[in-house]
Image (cartoon, rainbow, N blue to C red; front, side):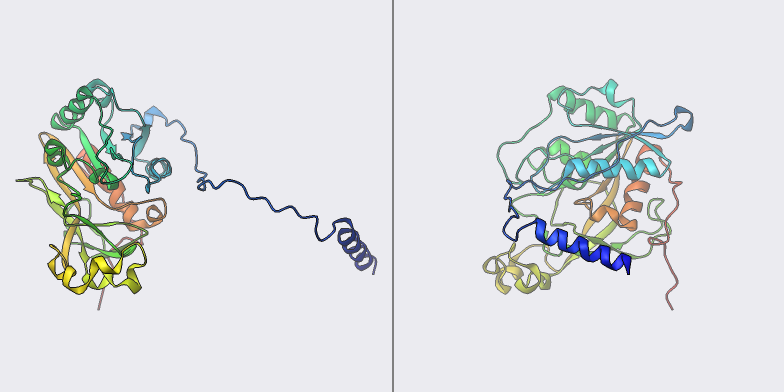
Length: 317
């Protein structure tokens, strides 16, 4: 009874202390939400982890590259296999700087918008340092938005294997799609199930591959004309641009397109993965597995990281 009386008293007090019209409605200036993520912590040098340098700092407007960098660093650190640093200023990078690392991960795009004419390129010496680093045996991971530039730079296309070409390539509408692991015998994909899913991601299709590129495709995705239906694609893809007649005329429609591949570049190893648009997609185990195991392969030539259950193959009767 005493508790009930106290609660009633509190209700009366609260109800009478604040008049109904006293609440102030505030309209602050909009700002995109910030993702709170862990700060990197030092790694014991005696652990002898693979050293990774993420090169970032310029990207297209729809990519949260700082949040992705932090999450990639967290994933790699927590695997116990990597020690990761991030630089957002590679304009004057050097070969000596890069040789301190076992593998470099590119999360970089030179343009604010995919088809902008203006781009931010590194200095000629820094660009040469990256090519020399890989050619002389360094590992390279080309990651997601790193394929949305370089279409006017043949040497870069040769380095990563392929790039998106604004005149021919396209991003297929589905935000969630199946990824077909077409080679499950490769060290990176060994033991993975045949089909995995990625979410809130980009399917890069009809990419421009380097002439004579000797890539080894690990995973593909299917670009279906049915997915361009306005009821599925949404307002981002205007119906008038994707009529049945126009879809039939588009090169590479209703076909499989490489999403993950490897190649050699001089003495170096290159792991290219077009997937991993943002921190949402990076929360799914199969994609994490591809990134972690591909980075380990690029940096060391072998894969020791185990697969989580969500990425493993399973018996199908």
